[in-house]
Image (cartoon, rainbow, N blue to C red):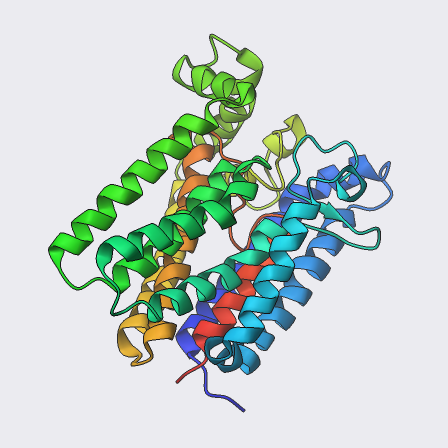
Length: 363
């Protein structure tokens, strides 16, 4: 039996249990409505199977096969290309999810998934392998190769469109690059390139009308494009109504009133309503503890590839958690990002469980 990090596994377990409890509370009324009062566990059963059971399997696979992925570049490259191919297939009408306004999902008939989520651990490993082979290459050439690869792999995700996912991946991959820099001058150069890339992405992303409307609505507090502000307003009201200690698990009013994308993009709002400010601080502390533990794993390992992987996953979790919670408390524009361990959205959760399994393996 491989040796594992008990603290990291404990944190994953606690967050998973909290995720189950919160999802059950958030989905119960919605399940009854969906099934005409026949089954209050409809969405919970789906969550338990797709997120928790499969997530546990992927986590164990990460532990058992982690060393293989960290060492065997051919396997990683094959899985990367396979997942990238599915991202491209998502643009074809025959593979698109029916009635979907975006090309983020691939429908194979028996299974529907988001390849842009599944690709994250393979993309992280691929960039680590590339940068590991460029140690003796000049900084300028490294930056050129990095930017070119970013364009090749992230452009299809950008056009799905999924700007928030692109930003999360970009930040994770940039942390890998920073880990291979040797001086402040190199660090500063990479920082400038990263800022430019982010600004370009945001500028190009604003060409989509729905994003323009969402941004204008956010800054005008719903006075313009009021419909775009409804999700922010409902989420914010739910969070504020929780007060200091919350209404108690199962006592959310807004799960009945309704919040758009309540089981995915707005799941934190239900948690905050039922657990209050204190409960929300506790949850943020758990995420902080998980991220800190991953960083400690990075510091303590002598394996440069695993160190880079740990740092990239830590940035991934931080960005995703910040974007989700920030949009739920009206701090930033809604991003459509799921909350790790809590939201429905199996593709992203399975990719995360798998990555955490790799990190938790000692050695």
